[in-house]
Image (cartoon, rainbow over all chains, first blue to last red; front, side, top):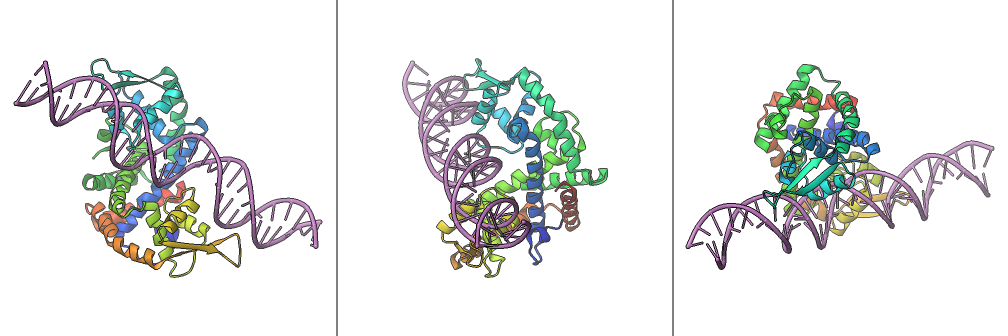
Length: 153
Length: 153
DNA sequence: TATATACATTTGTATATACAACAGTTGTAG
DNA sequence: CTACAACTGTTGTATATACAAATGTATATA
């Protein structure tokens, strides 16, 4: 759908505004879809994301700052996010004895099991989201977004 | 920047996941930039967005549901969002006498003035965000995102 | 060694958002 | 005309997020 008809504006928006609105709007749709998938499992996208980051550590503990820097959407309270995951038994935390400022965060086997239950659902949702694009278009979209981030970041 | 290096994953992600992560990640950057611009003016992106919607009404009042359906990122409490704008004197609200379930929401002249102060800042931020794209690339990006929304929505 | 500075995380506070329940109004079938 | 369903918006509650200040630990320097 064209952005003009979504926003019900007849005016001719500058291209830059169209792009930005397109991205914001598309984000909203994707975010909603992913949320819908995760809701029955009682985790937010952010929580799911952190679990994946921790699994990617292959058994090595991660500090809070490592988790934070790898999160897709930086959020301003990783401590409390982790605490929620701890309450759900998906994650454990202890002080790093080498450097007591840091904490070692690791995913539990329950967390791993949990992830493996929903990985497939997320993957197929993602495939569904982009199924209207050809492979070339998909690659081009990735390239263009990367180009935006290059300077905008 | 490539998504793999951002996420520090060496593994070969499926294209669909790359696209999705790219969009989510790019959203975060754009959202942050727009927020930075608006913060000194003490309005959120959503609030700014609603003000623009109301201005687009050209003096005609809008109901809550109209505002809601035109918002870029639907949020689940337009009532309170409008109330914040009322507190700031940018907006006024009264019951629609024809249909007392509805409310007439209109932007005040203060709201119009406020918008005109920041329009330019937002426009130039948006231009800055996409300045690394050629015109053709910009059009293509818009087209591809539109294609995603077509089916994903 | 004492002190300052940097670092890593946590906590407090305000605001934003999601979701469900509620309340008043309107339209309509019988 | 009444009863009921649908519509429109508001409110309550829980959780999420942003931001700044605080806490505790490590490091550098005089």
